[in-house]
Length: 78
Image (spheres, rainbow, N blue to C red):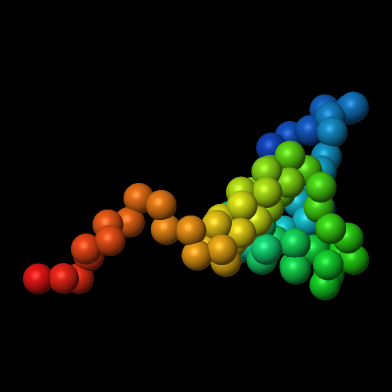
């Protein structure tokens, strides 16, 4: 594998590589985690992934229970 820098590097500069291709990093946590499991064989536990997963888990639980607080009971009636 070759590495190319976009700028000149000095001795001691840190070089890192993203686990994601450009089109994956901005996607939902579920997509990113599946990508990492398939190609890198691990589940990310960074703050961003943990927080997004907790958010979506909460949303899914809300929907699964049929909680419709705030929805008008008369919607759809003339």
